[in-house]
Image 1: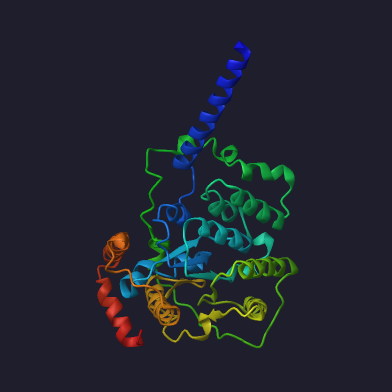
Image 2 (image 1 turned 90 degrees about the horizontal axis):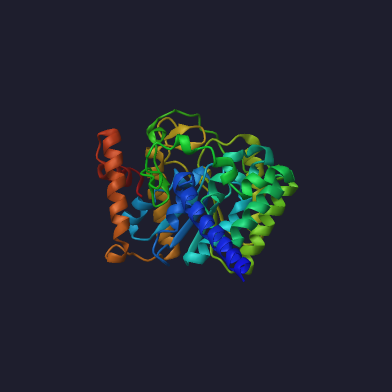
Length: 350
C-alpha cells in the first residue's frame, strides 16, 4: 500500500513538473508569433484569416483595413513558412474562430525542401498549442523534408534544443511583441526604401511545380473542398524571377481547376512605385504595404460583404492597435499616417 501511495505521488509530481516546465518554456523560450497572439483574440471575432509567409505579415495592415472598413483580418504567417503547414493552420484556426473567408498566399509552393531552415520549421510549430493537430503538422513537414529519425526528436521536444538558453535571458519581457499589430508586423527594415526594377509578369510561361509540392497543394485543395471553406488564393506583388513566375502559373492552373480564384497582384500593381515602395526585392515597405492594404481591403469589402464592427465595443482592441501602429509610424517617420492614407486614396482612387 505504501509503495502504491509513493507511485501516485511520483506520477503527480511528474505531471505538475511537466505543466510548470511547459509554462516556463513558453515564457522564456517559446516563439512569439502572430499565432501566439491569435489565441488571445475573443472567440469568433475574426472575419478573415490571412495565412502564408512573410509576404502576408508585412503586406496587409490589418488595423488599417479595420479602420477603413470595420472588418477584422488576422495575419497568421511566419518567415519562410513551409506550405505544407497551411492545411494544419486552417484546422487550428477553426478551433477558435469562424472566419467568413480564408486567404492563402501561395508563394512558398515554389520552394524546394532545401529552401527551409530550422527557423522556418520551428517558428510556427513552437508557437502552436500542444495538440494532435500540432503533432500532425510537425510530422507532415518533417516527412516532407525527409528528416532523418535521429534529428526529429529535437523538433518534437523543443526544450532539448533550448535548455541552455537560460543565460541568454536578461529579464526582458519575451511575452510581448510590440512589432505585431493583429498579425501585421513592422520592424525597422519595413521603413527602408530600396529601389527595385519592376519585372513584368509572363503569363505564357509554365514550369511545373515539383511532384512533392503538387501533392501538398492537392491535399490542401481536397481538405478545403471537404470542409466547404471559403478560400481566396493570392500571389504577392514583388520581383519574382522567370522560374518563380512559371511555377506560380502552374500552381494557379491547378487551383483554378478546383474552381478557386487566384489573385496575382503583379498583374494589377500600377499603384506600386518600384523605386519607393519596397525594402528589398521580395517585400513591400511600409509605404507599399499601406497602398496594398487600401487596394485589397477595398476589394474584399466590395466582393465579400464583410461586417462593419467599428461601432461595437467588443472590437475596441482593434482601435487601440490601430492607434498604436499610427504612433509607431509617426515616431519612425515624423509624418502623419492618416495624411499619407488620405494622399494615397485621392491619388489612386482607393
